Length: 194
Image 1 (cartoon, rainbow, N blue to C red):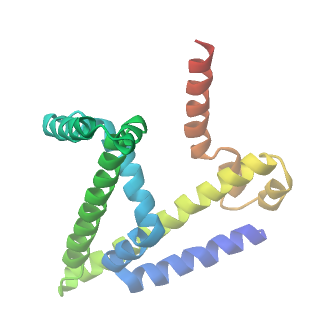
Image 2 (image 1 turned 45 degrees about the horizontal axis):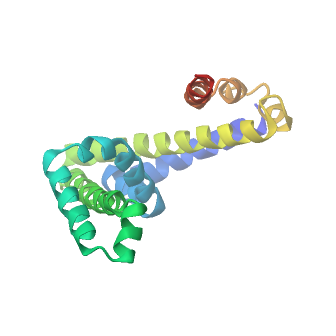
Image 3 (image 1 turned 180 degrees about the horizontal axis):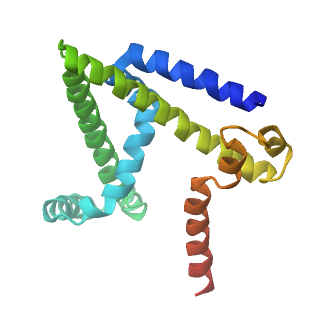
């Protein structure tokens, strides 16, 4: 057993203790709060932007907005139109709506999971452990990916993981995020070649 394996065991014990202590409801609030919550909202907005932009009522509102700016004719309105202020305003409004909906969903789920019932309490604690462990695993994969970009998969960091009882060396080399970023890179490379 190497040092990295001991760190994994400590992290696992911490996930069990904190996850059971916080429970799913409080853990979900903790994880989705602050900067992580905003990043989650940005990712959701990224996927929703094109879909919601094509809704008829959204197109009508944006048309009214740009028409009002065009009718004004002042230099500031022309400048705003040239930077596509309509899409900027739409993105900001979409982000605010997603933030509010995310907070509402988290609030509802968190409160359901904190109902004073023995069965729900056990489920809440077990799901809290799973949630926290999944969060730590995702952070670990992201850190592994960043280190692999900086030092490569055969650098000094890999030697600290080599021979891991938990297969951390294999996980570092075969990080599932590698395939995601590699497919994105190939897509851009293919698009650039056309």
